[in-house]
Length: 391
Figure 1: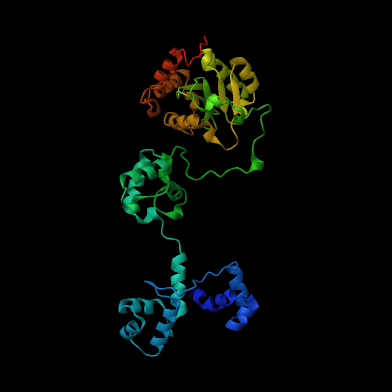
Figure 2 (figure 1 turned 30 degrees about the vertical axis):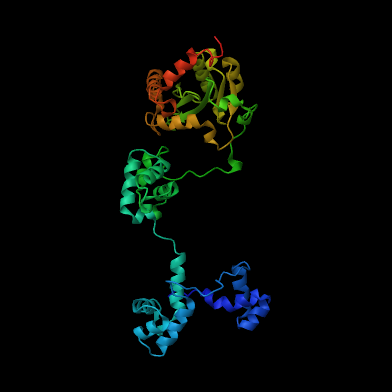
């Protein structure tokens, strides 16, 4: 049997002595506590009294009451007499005697130890114990909804039922940490990342080399932030299978959400990205070539040449800050439904990629009052105020 925890109530006289102004050694001496125990108790509490000033009262038994129960029981009193003298119900006393039962009868320290462990023991995972909640979360995951969306939707669907609420982190832990129970690991395939385990953050020392001549996003003009002027783009790569070395470049116009895709069938190095990006930007009018924001991937090592050929001002995000390309990140998540992870993306030629981009550009968007990105872009280009008269 596990060694009983030392009940905090035993330390009450010691802490009362400390509060009266005595030092640790003096408090231990006047209360009969050993010097070793007093130092351990004081150090563990950080010098702050963890014992309530007044004895605990209410629905739960206190350490003092447990000592009274032990004395009355050892004196030969039955359950009902003990209940009468302590002011507790016979059922409470009966459960308490069972909790503290040992081969030598009831022990208050054993009962208190079990209670203390129960209060600090981690509860069962919510998704493992609540079947209705687990089924609801599973249904949402199958519909490819993110844990954040699921948590928010459950709050709306069950506003008066706290048992039907769960945090996004709990969902992630149930998927990635199987000891947490509840959700099967296979359901993680429905997440946008498709990962079956969490990807650890790289240490600072593991960061890839910096690209010479980068202009950081902190220097980007304010007009890019408010999305009022078209022509500011965010870009990134979607990678295919490792064996194929294929990729697709993604470009998203910030104010409209308009998408263009770059065909990179067998190489996504700096030169391949430069050539594909320059060719794609050449299809746009000048007023739609203002800036491009990218992460610090090596594929943008030729950013100076790209800027000279396209007229774009190129800015780089801070490390580990995908939210600085929020429009692009969101679009990449949508594109993974067309371009699955781990597949050979060279299969998707320029024509197929243009079809995918056209489908996204024809999708109604709530932020545009359910107009499509293509419609909004056409309106901006035809408006003499927003195109600033640039031919």
